[in-house]
Image (cartoon, rainbow, N blue to C red; front, side):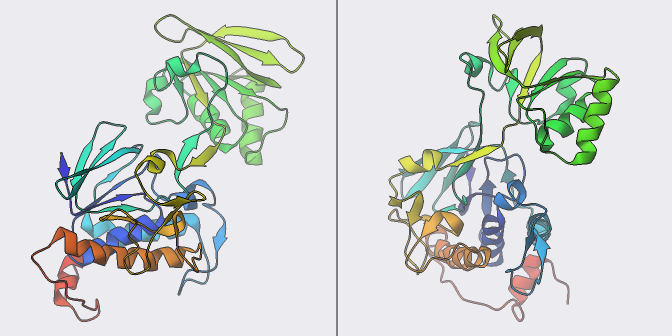
Length: 338
């Protein structure tokens, strides 16, 4: 059981800055995110696109902003649990018992939902039976490339992720790359590399094919792929990787008894608290009159929610506002030496 003053759901910019604010005022916190990396929408949707509306930063990319926020909280050593989705939030003795799909339990008086537009879920294969092999032989992300060494890996997709992993895994594995079109959407240099590897026989390239069926007793043994003209090819494979992008859903959040309107969570504007005491929502996922879906708005919301958490986490203490420019206590927390 992990006990903490506040649990933040979402490791995007708003979640990271909210964690910073919690630590500044002396509260402990942990972060859970369904993605395999820190950064939320900034990293998944526009890591290389310029952002022009961050105060005092004329221009930065989503990746640059994320890296700066990570550096800002580095001194605090905040536990961040990636590849985990919060499935259940239950009231218990004036606290919240929070359970993830990885089996972790958190006990906290404060839960801050900073989940952007909800949880990112991978688009999955359609053929019947695929779910039987999910998280074993059929995967939608790569956590450890070493497990594929010496194996046959069939990769589906036509974007950067599919192309990059096809090139990378071809160094140690037998790779089949399958795409439903002739044209790829990835970086041209990587597309050229894939065609080069296919020409040399290092990669088996199949275009205008899609997954038709999967088979195997206890584990995946073979797959069938179907061409646009109806032709079906069957071959053995140890692993299947699918890279079809992500879809955004509220997921389990919809079952937590919160006031939800059009996939956003209604909050007050004093503490950004929901209709459930001790549960807050900040960033794009929250809604209130005049709400602007800007990163800077999320920073403001997170700062106020963090200070609201103090009362529940430290009921016997009085919160005292301090400026970072003059507070010795805050500077000590930041590790600033004067």
